[in-house]
Image 1: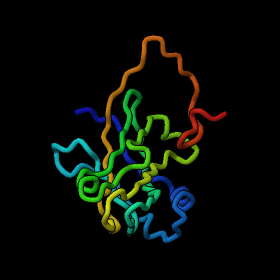
Image 2 (image 1 turned 30 degrees about the vertical axis):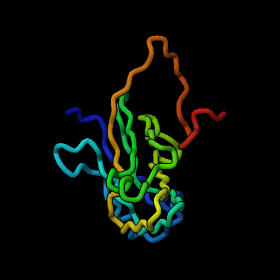
Image 3 (image 1 turned 180 degrees about the horizontal axis):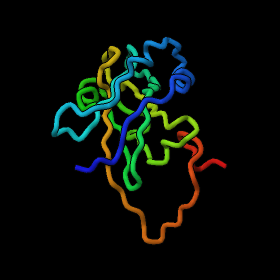
Length: 161
């Protein structure tokens, strides 16, 4: 196994700014993602607050988490399989891609997970429930790659001037 990353919490100020939640107890109780078993590939993300999602409803979850990732690796975010199966819980961008340089973004690399209940039943998540999972994947680049720009912003910032 490679040890190529580390999860951390964003600052309290960044979490409050991104989540509009001012209850400091929520920030203080944020859990870092962890694997459930030695054989698990995915690191479970815990929701930092109670959430009720009716069918068709969407919510952007400010996780309070950032990831320092070694170059050559990417963190991919997926809904937990059980929630996708039971409730058709889906990420709005299908798969979240967290690049290594996102850690240095102006928003501290705060991982936001936007989910939609595409099922037909009410979804109830309690604070601390596992709702998404992240898997670290190695990637390669082409022989003629000449990318030289550096990230400054967060989501969708690489194509903005």
